[in-house]
Image (cartoon, rainbow, N blue to C red; front, side):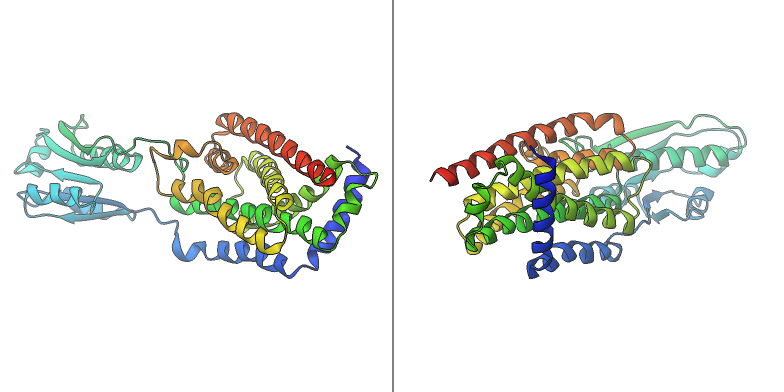
Length: 354
């Protein structure tokens, strides 16, 4: 590949793409939508608890003093379990009679805890209540308790979200959607428009190699993707201490999607065919991000062949500080880049010989 030739061709495509009205829709739409994330996902974490005590207890007041705790008192132990089953609360607390008197006498009668599932939120709520009980006792001592998890298998399946909050993963989702839009809708337009203007054939028989042509057009998609991705990260507070890992994944991910867009563009005969192909690809490519925001899912493993699967998981690892887990995702994206790039070169050669 000739770097000078790639730079000249990429400069031409950048100028041409700026003149394309589709660019405004493809580039600006993800940026505008990302600014609306705050309207739907907020940073406030609320731990929902439900409690039953036969007699008044100071534990209720102590928990209500915590800003992030929402506690609902019940009239019976059965109502506590019903609230957990209906997902009204994550942790249920059933206290014995005269619980406060027992604490005052340094006794620790058994407390029954009901957890909705084995999630981090439920376990954190359990630990918080246990520590609060210890603080209310004049003599710190382990809480005697019975713990029942109502849905112990709730965490089965792969979770692309990891330990990110929903508003944090929303940043990942919009990042991926922006990259998919650039790669599948903008980059192939460069090929199709050259074909319609009868300039693609001239370009293919020029001194530029097939690799130069493919890389130059993919570079345009990478530039726009990195620009919009960086803006989304900055606007939504995704600039963490692992920002370099995030940008590396954005770079290789946008390259893979740009190559995929080039492959689509080389197969599409006109802009109408391109729109059809693009519409068919947008949904499956964004599916890992859409499913990922919902939490663990046993079927998401079947999407591992998609570049966006590794892009979503890798960025989630980077944003949550698990940089040591990124390498498999990065390697997978590099391999997919190479495979798709070879397919693009083959498609261009096939067109010239056709």
